[in-house]
Image (tube, rainbow, N blue to C red; front, side, top):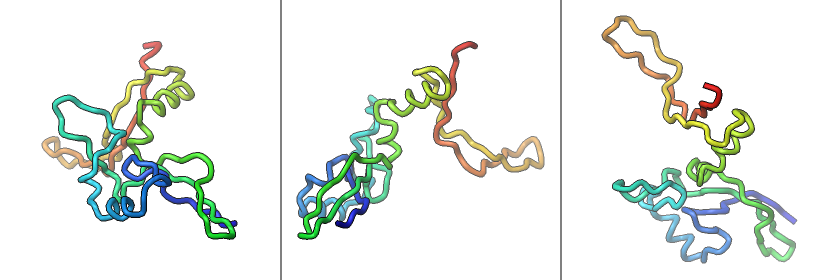
Length: 140
């Protein structure tokens, strides 16, 4: 028996239940054209679009038996950042484990590793951005 990891969800759809025709169809679209079911709905904003090239939301192990039949094995593992942040479950879990609060404040897109500034009129450029920082306001 051969086992390998592969796509579990493609653009929010269970890959194991997609027809070969639908998989071919989805493989030809641009990821920015596909809606993302895991991004939170924001009133007044456009439809949420996928930000992950190729569209895999999660991975799963597949098994191929001696007859050549392939079947999904075990649970899926999230890989898409919006899948990880779905319903704030991950934020709550990390908050409880590390910060002892199930409702941490989430700061997004924070600049870090600022470059050196030569004068007060120049802005320092960030070397990169930190996607999410969790902060507890309890005990303040």
